[in-house]
Image 1 (cartoon, rainbow, N blue to C red):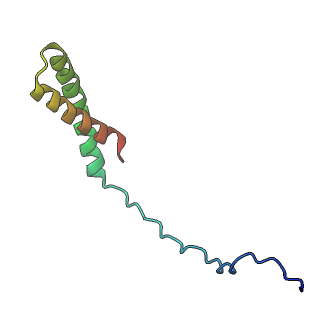
Image 2: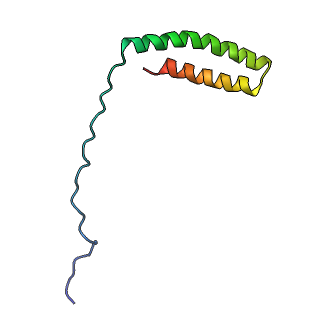
Length: 81
């Protein structure tokens, strides 16, 4: 019997790097949008605190739902650009 080199399976296909992704350009928000969100934040924070106190004293399902909505809007206005 002759010498046969070890068989390691079929050859690997050539490597092609993945296509480059285009970066999304974030357009800056207009000044009036930032000003409006700041005003909403200044109104929503006291409303959310008042609703939290009201929910702690006399909790109803409507109060809890309203508190969740107010907290969600406040977080959105505070932490988005």
